[in-house]
Length: 156
Image (cartoon, rainbow, N blue to C red; front, side, top):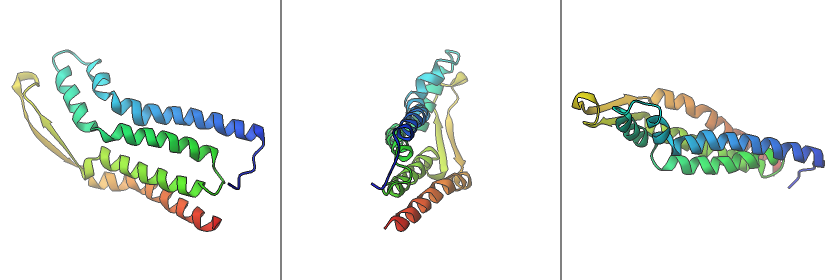
């Protein structure tokens, strides 16, 4: 793979990879997967069901899956930094972070449907245009993909 490391360097990379992967797991998998219960547990019982429904609608089912794959790629990226496969890992990581950002921002328009479970039976639809913010948040992912492509070109 083109990676020459001493056992101490490899140990440091594995430990730092495990720590950063654990943090990635919590932020990108655990919190989205359990957002409804985390939110409803800290709110008054009158608005907890509405907040839980809102959190479930915002997260969807794909965010936790992307978060799990990101966790693995973050670990591999730290351990394999400087090797031939590192460029491909960077490309995949950038693509997944871009997908995560796109899914979180719901394609640039966050749509929320408020049901009658709110106080006083309030209901309605809210659409928030976050397309510019989404584009700004996609820039680091695109730069990561570009860096991975450059590293692949250099290693060939």
